[in-house]
Length: 235
Image 1 (cartoon, rainbow, N blue to C red):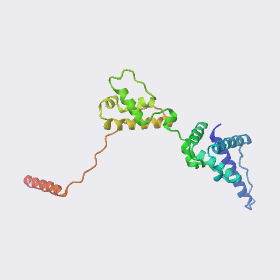
Image 2: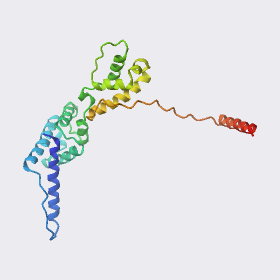
Image 3: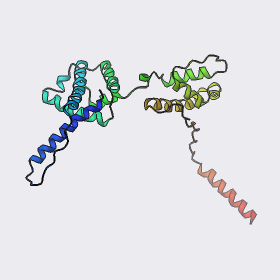
């Protein structure tokens, strides 16, 4: 069951508002009925959002302070259905990520829709990706010439090390090799999270452009005077 089915709840609510609005209008123009969602799909959509709210109620025992009446919770279900679809939370896996983080929450109070949407976004750890710092240590260790048997915790670490340059990781000081690796690893992690091809070439990190320093006015005047003298001698 996909969360996309909850869009049917939105469709039903919108159609009902349209019908009510049309009934208030006095007009002789023929009206054409909008296609209604199939009852089976509506039941499936309602089951998704009802199951989600039931599990969240178990996670947050103070939920009644947010929804004191049945009409409040019914209205919230429609709002959450719309918000989840708009945020492209469209799979059971995403909802399970959100519920897993809800179960780890230390709060007793119902989360905002925005908070739950954030919980539904995968963290690198959900894909078995190490932290950037751990990945950097692993890449530096495996890039050392004395390392015979390299073990990689995740393909993204290997790709980032390859793109940053194993020679650079083994020979440059950390303040130089870390930025190179960090940029490559950030791109590799993003590709994993977004389901993109991991092994495509990653743009190299460019050295930072030095910031311009202000010139002392007296030194600038001396340079100008020197140039003027040179011009006079050449004329």
